[in-house]
Length: 298
Image (spheres, rainbow, N blue to C red):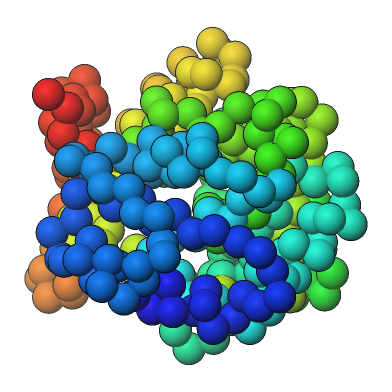
């Protein structure tokens, strides 16, 4: 409910409508929304249909010139939406703009990313950002003004209806992860620009649900990554990533086995990483079955 509270507290002097799409949650969210926010348009799904499909349900019936996609674990800071809207209305070439995401303590989260490419998936992104900060921007650099980027993190982003009408809505082949990256890539190919607006700030309780089953989340990420390469990159790039990624996982698995042996399995973080890499490697050996991720297909 903090997310909805923050909308009503911080978004003023703007005409807007709110859609809440509930993907069959079991925590009483639907009842809470109905009781506390009766004016909200609630869409209740009988199953978890995924991030893209759920957002598309609202995007397909929206009435405004701009749509703000906001995760339920995000809390707006004062004037965040006003700053996004002001930027979009003054930048007609912008298809999507994202915010600066913050941790609970106010420290910056990564809010922008590059389009997945062979080099970003094989080399350590931190190293790429260190040596090539212009090409690979990150949270470690403070930006004072909006900058053009490849992609933004979809926890909070504003999208132009005009751009959506030309490019289309989110690709529902993605269940979770990289659907916004794919969207940004499609916008880019059509000539729309993607921006990061640093003074629009939003708290993001990132990954709380993912931490319950980290290896399943990682498997789901790899599903999306391979879909992105198959759809948007050359056949050679796709083949390369399908070969090189499992090799990289195997190397990390071996290193984590050694690390756990040296520490006698006393480090929880090392144990958790060992489980993650083991599950990822087994998933690849089993030819990447859907049953091992978050999404449950019938």
